[in-house]
Length: 513
Ligand code: SIN
Image: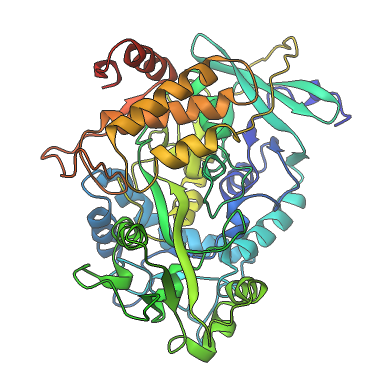
């Protein structure tokens, strides 16, 4: 990056070039904004990989209250009903907005949007583009719009490393790029950095998504919430590749069945069977694997010969693994897929730090509760980006100063991955979580490449320890039942560090609650 960065001072800064970041920048136009992306736009982002589509009540038999009821049922008592209702009422118009940006949604012969079915939806309400290429097609359209918007300066190859904060208010971003450390002064910063898949060995997300936004917010003193709720997708292609290829839920929506190595279905007693909520199905698959079975998706009959036409990207990945889904069983296992928790935000995407907003997977709006309803997340990112942009635009730009450039290490999660994968998977227990908190504490307190991923991991671990019940995606063998009262936990990094230090001295964890 060669331009004098001071020429950008004062502009809102958006960190992250996925759907949430691009949409926020577009909604802010014509206000000049700076968009920082770690990679070339469109690469190494979960948005581009999204196969599932966007959920919205667009069918004649549907309305937002039905969509809300499904979302709340799956969220296991922890959805913020007010936020969920606002987001889901706005979903149909957000999809129309994307179509206006040129997203080529799949349509029926008469031109209406084609609506797919996914698990735990009581109606067909998922829109796709090019079948399982939805994320790629949305990104293609939004990147083109961003590149041609004169108000948006995109700086690629820049990694945000710390937020500058004074008196709980944002002052700018310390970042790193090819010429070294750089400081961008601004009192308005939006985090749109995506999720935490890179903190796990088995994930369907790019490994570069390793919770940087959570680390930035946490080190700035922001409140994070619902961190213990991590969604595992039941059907990732089981093979040597990492990250793993997702076999979309839409494949089950079109009739594919789960069987084991004997060829027999094994979901008897699982309500909803193949289309049960994701937490339920991921646990059922996990338990069957734990008994020594192998698990497969049988798509031979349905979608059968239609598979390659309906799911071209998945068919191509299967081909790469020597599998023809119309003829062969597809080996699957669960993998980390989405984080329901994140930076706590209000109805405008504002965090607890003045001048800091969050949007997309890095944020926790309360829509998803303890378990996300399929295809609600892209919808949330698109809807909330507009609210965030309106709030940023309504916050006056104030003078910003230069700061000494500071260099912070680039995060590297490789030490943390095995720890989190063991302790924070589909099935958890208190002893494992305590041991993991003990192992993460010194890493989080150090100042090296492992410390940001370890700080995020420690916060998730402390949140998981604090939740002494099983609810949604959080299942503890030592507390297998759901508590009578549903509570959401908020946490700061200071709370988590204090709780882990206390734990290192004694087995109790009162400080984290
Ligand atoms: C899928 O296609 O199964 C994933 C969709 C989602 O995560 O919402």
